[in-house]
Image (cartoon, rainbow, N blue to C red; front, side, top):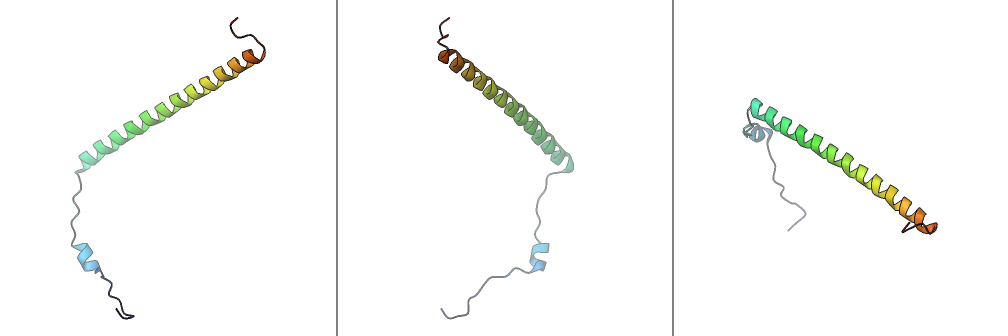
Length: 74
């Protein structure tokens, strides 16, 4: 193959002819509502998860503190 290469091109008139199906506005609103609900659930789960991690870290500190003071089992 020589120095010249062939690259396909797309004309804007070809793009303008492409039809992209979209859901109705009411269906789009339902999708947005569903995604908003999922986002709220994810945020809630993240907060709960972080709270659990914080509690476990406090428990770890407490157990280590008692272990270093020889107070475990009391």
